[in-house]
Length: 116
Figure (cartoon, helix red, strand yellow):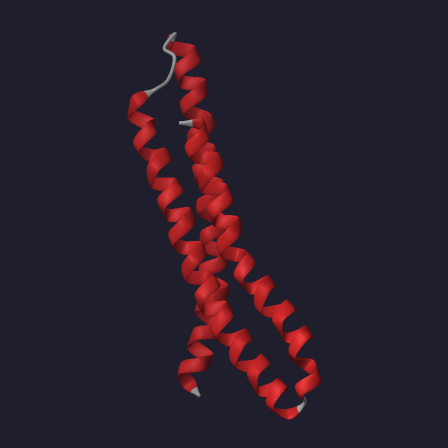
């Protein structure tokens, strides 16, 4: 039971960290473009590494957060389905919403990699 409470707290923490990393990646890529235009260079190659790092962290943290969210939602959904089988369709919607966190991270990383 104590382990479940720890997972719930880390789930919120991971989602907040992933959101912060998404924003940091966008800021780093925007600053790389501004720096490159000011110097007259097409792209700043030193900041391309930061873009790859931001894309990797976006996918990594969002996948971890989605895994933790799906574990909590999935176990609660299966408990509800065991009580009332007609809740299966509604419970799948919640599991899909929790899985959407990983898809958002993947989309953000594709946008980041497209700008490098």
